[in-house]
Image (cartoon, rainbow, N blue to C red; front, side):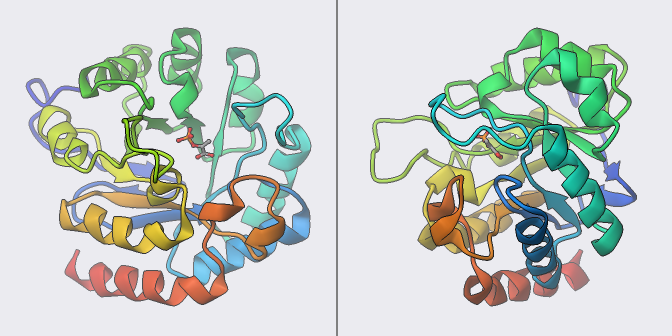
Length: 263
Ligand code: PEP
C-alpha cells in the first residue's frame, strides 16, 4: 500500500489543512517536551516566526532512562490544544501506547510514532485506525525496508495519511547522538509515495548541527523538517542541547522563506 509500484504519484498529506509532500517545504517546530503553558506558547510563537506551519511538542515522552522527564501526559495535551487555539498551529504529538491512542487523537492533529516504537505493531495498528495523519519516525536500528513495513502496518488499517521521518540511525560514530542517514530520503522517496521529512535536531543531538543538517535535508529533496525549539534551552527538561533558541532562528526562517516561493 505504501509502495510506489502500486501508487506511482507521490502523495501529499494534509495535517489540519497544512500540506506535506512534494512541492512544499513544511516545517514542524516546537519544544521537545511540553513543560508549562508559558514555555509551550513561547516556543510555538518562536516556531511560527521562523516559518513553521505545524507545532510539535511531546506530552508523553519515551525516554531511554526511567529517571528522565516523562512528560505531563494529558495535561500536556491540554496545553498543546490551548496553544493551537492561540497560534493557529495544528499539533503534532507523540503517542506511546495503543491504549491511549484515542485519547491522544482527541487533542492532536497528527499522531507521532517515535523511533523507539517504530516496530510496536499493536501501536502501529491502533494509530492506523485512529483517523488522524501519522508521523512515523525511523527506528534508530531499522533498515529502510523495515521502516516501510512499519508504515504498511498503519496503511493496512485503512490510513494512508502517513509521513515518514528520518531522524538518524545508530552507527559507530560517537561525536553525534545519531548519524543522519541523508541517503534514506531519496531512497525512501523512490520506494514509497509517502512524503519523507527530516529531523535535524534528534539526528545530531547538537544545536550547532541543526542548520547544516537542515541544509543537507533540503539539498536531497526532503519534503519537510521537524525541529526542536525552546525559549530557554539551558533549563529545558528534555534535550536542551539540541533545541534552537531565538538567536538561531533567523537563518532557519531565511531558508524556509527562500524555499517557499520556489515550491
Ligand atoms: C521526539 O521527536 O520527541 C523524539 C523522541 O524523537 P525520536 O523518536 O526520533 O527519538
